[in-house]
Amino acid sequence: MRKILVFFFLFLCSSSLFSESGLVRRSFKENGQVSKDSLLAALTEELNRSFSKLKHAEKVPLYFLEYEVFDSRRFWIDASLGAVSSEGESNSRILTIDVRLGSREMDNTHEIKGRQAYLNDSNSRSVGSISLPGGDVDAIKEKIWLLTDREYKRAHNNYLKVEMNKKVTASEEDESGDFTCDKTTDVYYDRAEMPLFEREKIKNLIKKLSLKFKEYDFLLDSGVGFYAKNLNRYIVNSDGAQIVTGNNYMQIYFNMSSRTEDGMNLSRYKSYHFENAEEMPGAEQISRDINTLLKQLARLRKSSPQEPFIGPAILEGQAAAVFFHEIFGHRIEGHRQKSASEGQTFSKKVGKKIMPEFLSIYDDPSIKKYNGTFLRGNYVYDDEGVKSQRTSLVENGILKGFLMSRIPIDKFNRSNGHGRRSEGRMPVARQGNLIVESSRRIPRETLRKKLVEEIKKSGKPYGLIIKDIAGGFTITKRTLPQSFTVLIKYALKIFPDGRPEEVVRGLNMIGTPLQTFQKIVYTSDDPAVFNGTCGAESGWVPVSAVSPSLLFSEIETEKVQKSNEKPPVLKPPYFERRNLNEKD
Image (cartoon, helix red, strand yellow):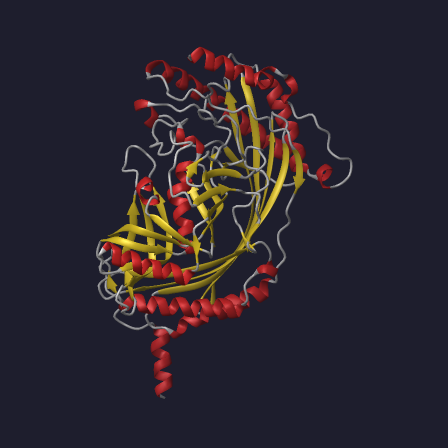
């Protein structure tokens, strides 16, 4: 059976393995941006030279080579209590190289198993990277040449380790190979320019907003910030791709922290994400939100710590979006379905029901806005030169597929444009815009009434409404319990007898995915967007998730760790001075 599978795989890939057409031979346009782009010219010329001369330079052939440059510009400003605490800008050009030796069935990136896995760097997702200069083509080419030589030699060393490991370890259940047959031959040029914004105007806004925190003596720390990033990715590879694609990411954010008398650190945070300055929220909106979160923080300081709890709960919109990103999204990434170290929660469940039939989920990085809200997980091409595309994951509760990079898995041998990474990392399947939709939608107030019904039905003294979370993490490795934790920042106790709600603190939502998904009984009709940056083995990438609020018939919470330090003995100096001035 194994020989048949191998033969079939090689037959599908024969044009990629043995054709000379892998070289980039397209000419640039005579006029326009492309012909003037010295970085793209240097990358293309050096890739052609390196691939043509190195592919048969050693016994183990070089069958794929990719150069990707992360060309970024950043500007940031932070203010605290009316003064600028940090301001700066930076430019960087980081080249990252992918070298694949051997064949698509088995190459130098193949997972090493057993004891050797802990000692070998081929299992890490790091690849070679180096800073590139600007301007002179020869100076750029020299850096490319040096890094290519280093990574080519490292790839040979890793390939030998892979060969040895294969001989001394058990056969693999998934024999789908190490690289798909996708031919990334697109030529695309859409460079983004740094968005325009009035720096002094934004600086004054940030300083003015940060002054609001000076009115509260219970704050340990606070701040308001602005951040703008312009990122252009250059991708050229031996399949034939020449891609330049850009994105702009802008945000305003504020944070505040305090500490209770029993030593628990508390914080509130909010951010606004947008693509250009015209979409930036106004000062009045941000000011109102600061006031709201200040009131919440004051209530949290006076609240009681939550005891471990099992019972009904609502996870509100944005918190629900983070929940699906962490608990479902990471477990549906393709490479996790074949790695011997992964729990493979959903690997054998395609075509089977994994959650309630009223839920459907897809990931579509091509969407830039959802109901008018900017989605940070938007991109045109992934980091392997594959165009982004909508990928159906769950339809009416039934698992349909996985997020795929160019790492194939059993029965899924094509990328769907989700191979992503940051500088110096190897691409793997990652989320872009994960969107949850429901056919069992009810108004927000009705959802709250359903919660009360669930509390009465369960016989519990109360239920929870989880309004905000700081994020979370999920464990997918077999070496640890394959559970999840959602970090709750603001939650309310709801009583079935109509008593006023109570704020609670010091709790995290915990559980395992297969069991927790089955506890979702209703959703609201008001989907909310989460924008953030996700960290995993291929680095940090911008992501978004969309979900309606969720009603669970049962969740479990645990206590959180606390510092045990008491709040400061004295009031902040500016606050004490202000009180003295008022007395005078």
